[in-house]
Length: 365
Image (cartoon, rainbow, N blue to C red; front, side, top):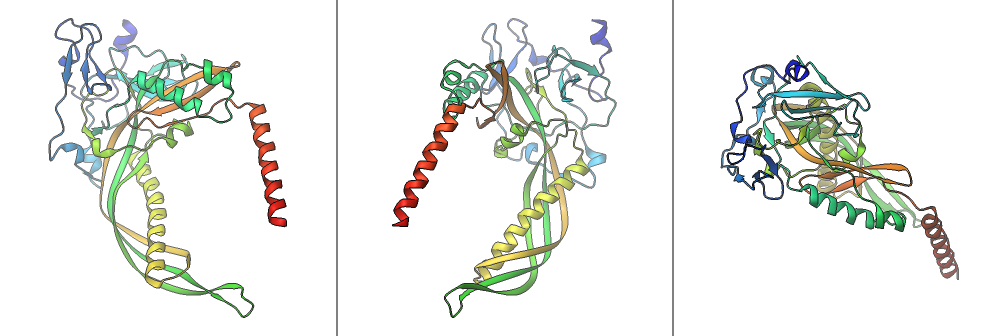
């Protein structure tokens, strides 16, 4: 008890008591249930739906980037504690009353509470879990069965260990962009010998585009590439942040700050703009190909949102080896590694060689 009393909440400031997190019937803890999209008591069956988002909801409100340091919220709506994993370095936020003895990222028990005096803002919106723990387990079995090179024994016997539900941090950015560009476009022609060649021309111009919700994963602690590969969410279902949504789940705080997040967003925005400019040049000049697109871009009216989005993290064992995988808590998309049967790979290689030999013989006639 003394240790818990010494735990500092994640951010300083006034927090409100979330009284309806306790079941009014039996007093047990009420948690968010992705299956019913409501607050539910597992002991007595109490069920409470949260208000649906209304038109003009704050979840769609963008925060001005330049004034963010003056306007950023630091109130998570309930007292929080932060734990750090000594094994993988992951950092997660929990309700002060919850037990957090296991890292939600790697499953290690080498976790410790930390004092947190950083100036960290609270999320402005949440994409709630829609995939339940049971549904995630079903999706895992289906996913493993579809793995072509996975051993049959693994497909039949492997069971996922306990799923850890966690909300991951994301920045989204909006901006008006104006780019001056230069590019080369090519038009193909046939020479006298019938060979295809290309004549290249240079063009330049101005390109305007509004960037809406450029997404940046706001974590530098989590190195699991599986998470990044499933981090695609429908932000149209975004809800205003409410501590009830993350009841019963961990929430990773952002470790990629706002300024660094915007730098990362600009890299992906530039790639997107280059692609769009190339498509525009190709269409307007009726070219066959475009190359060397160069941009100089100005950004205006930059706004951002800090959001949480759901992921299930789990693993399974086969022949003494542990395989990690993740499930998108909204869409159900899965990514991870699975066992590989050397025999199945060898058979596939033999089949490929035989097919190539047959094709070579047929087309060589």
